[in-house]
Image 1: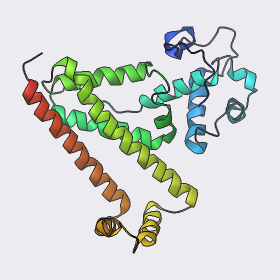
Image 2: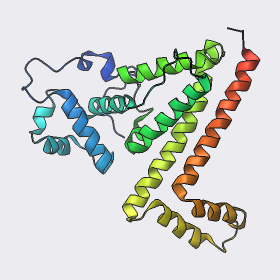
Image 3: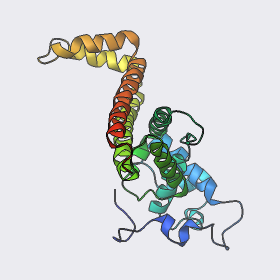
Length: 250
């Protein structure tokens, strides 16, 4: 995606004055939160490729120039939108006494839920620094959860990467599948059955046919949920092993 920013690696809306409230001369009633919310609605409905500042202005019923009272460019707005949806992740309370495994599970499940709800967000993660207030709260909470596992703090980022990369990869593929079904005008089960039927008899499909038939019988969505939770249990089990190995070496 082309960027309207400079090539400075530290460039972020959250690291300069544009992260502050709107300019004093901005027209009343067109606050930045409303603009970000409208951008999220458009991104959810039409995707990243069709999003533009002109379409956003039309959604808001204002001139395109009015939007620029609050954001300097499209990149800044997309970064704000990304942080806003990060705030939709329901965070665990690391001090509640809940087993850390359950807190890790909640982080992963919530992260996946938000990415599936906003497929465009997967494409923006990594495009920006993700240092907005909601992203920072998520990161801080995740570190505190991992502290409860007994892992030394220097090992925590690697363990959390395993959790988030798993959830991110799963949610990104899931979101694309949901979009593909929607574009085809089919339910997820209908789309999956068509794929399965087309593959029957093709070389290399024999090993997978029983699995796909079983998936079709229980429902594609239910089977996908089952796979995600089992995969997540595998990731958590790995963290348990490493926590035991490194326990006490903080």
